Image 1 (cartoon, rainbow, N blue to C red):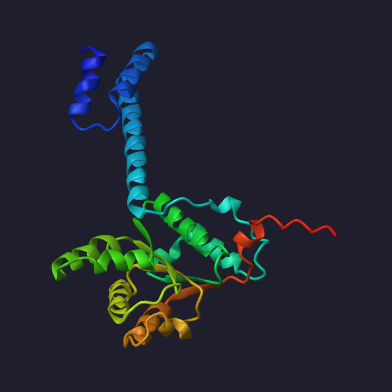
Image 2 (cartoon, rainbow, N blue to C red; image 1 turned 90 degrees about the vertical axis):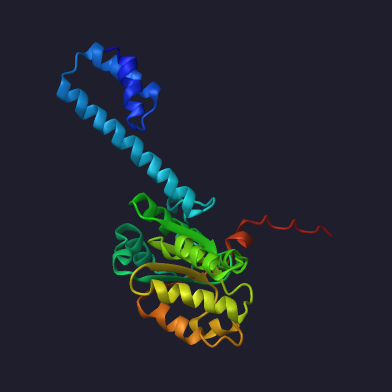
Length: 252
């Protein structure tokens, strides 16, 4: 059977590798006089790489991490205080995902909390886990626009309960009402001790009530999130202020 026909039939059987790649492989196998076992082994490896690449791309797309700097570009000398050892342990081992532990990245605006959270998400994706990244405002907007309870439940389950790791960015920057607090509590409580949540915030736990004024569930929300939580406090000046050019000195 001509190699082009074999390549076409492999595609029809569900091989993810492109027709061009399969044809090139069969041409190489013919010229190199590869044995049948070696041909099968290399086909399996080629297909595995293709599927892993597609799965990674799909997980990245669903994670909505956005654009960010990778960890190798993070300046660990910039913060006055940060537990680098704890973060690197979390990032390299990802053991907290197996235990369903949470992570809190806390500090003022512009100190790299979001970047560190996104890199935790990237590490999880690279290890085969599903991830969802969203600002708190975008998460609440997404859920509150749903017009029925079944639609709300579908959104909760598929986007915010199903992923192995959920990253909620920017808690504390915008005030929210009681219904928003109830939604976040619903997510935290249903993920409690089973799936991890990373939150970035500029507020200590005792001030979370200021984000959800009058909400009765805030204490319970904090209690569940903090029970198995790794806290990384960052004391630093804003990166954005550091990167701004200095104003020219006035001449007399």
